[in-house]
Structure formats: structure tokens, C-alpha cells
Image (tube, rainbow, N blue to C red; front, side):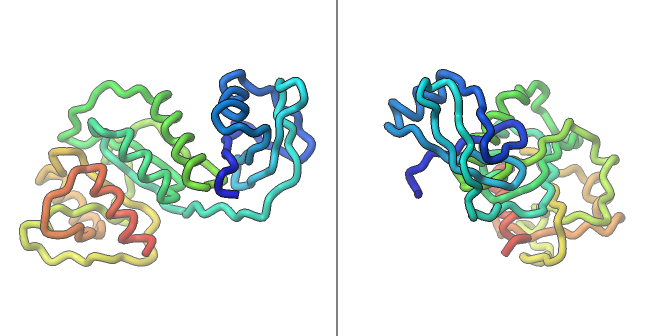
Length: 218
């Protein structure tokens, strides 16, 4: 089962569906993987599938018993230079929603969101998920209800006492490369947002996101 390729289908799928397939996928299945079957998934469900005799369609067969390992976490993140790495890791860790947030120190202005969506899909296919995260348009920090959120608090590296694990939280915020500004820290503290201790060193933003997620789901 581990060697069966997995493909995300961007529509609801059911047993018996006959889905037109791109030549690139046919090449991948028949020449790279050297087989004509695969697993197709979307919306939390996974199905066995196989190529039609003329290689023009994927025939959706029976639903598998594989449960979707995704969780209910929403990751709020400031766009960063290595955003592809951040989204890849967050997807592999089962995050349900991905919400870009514009903070004071965000420096990345132009992002190819279509490319980011492709990275998310590839990460979901590789990580055995039956769904892909929702990727939303960017919002401002002021648009978030900060009282319900946990955030990667870099002040732990400077001696502030901050817990390492937080329970019953499903929303996480990670800042940009330059971290949160003093005004943003004040806003987070005033709202009652819960800081997460990521250790005694200052981490890259993409690694901070992965560790923050792990602190919540452990």
C-alpha cells in the first residue's frame, strides 16, 4: 500500500465516477510509478482508482477505510521568504486552515498563491491526508480575535516564563522573520493571547510554525 501513488481530485468523488485525466498524470502513473492504479482523495475521503484502458480517464472504485489524519487547527502566519517550506510543513502536520496575516514587519509583498496551492496539494498527497488545507486571502492582525489564540512567543528566548504546551487551543499565530513588534506584543498580551515557548534560541519563522503546531497537538 505504501507504494501506491495518491492524487488529489479537486471535486467531490464517488465510486463509479469517470474523471478525465491529464497526460502528465498518465505519464507519472505509467512511466514513473509503472502502474495504472492509484489512490484518489478529497473532502476527507480516499478511494481506490485505476486508469481506463485508453488512459483518458481515472475510474473511481471503492472507498478505502483510511481515516483522514488531519486535525482542526487554524494556522495564522505572516508571509515569509520561505513560505513554501512553512506551508509544506503545516500541511504535513495536518493543519485544517491556513490564514495569511499581515503584521508590521512583513517584508514579502508579492506571493504566487497559485504556486503555494500546488505545494499544499503535493504535501497532502505525500503525507497521507484525505484533504487539503483551506488557504484564505490575507487579513490584518486587527481582524483576528486574539483572545482565542496561541502564538509563537520569541520572548521565551530572552528569559520570559512561558509554557511549552497549551491544551484546548485550535488557533495558532506565527510572526514574520523580524518577529512581532512591541505594539503587537502589547496587543496580544492585552487580548489574553497565550504565548508558546519554543525554546531558548531564536528560530526561523517556518521552523517556529512547525514547533508551535507540535506544542498544540502533542
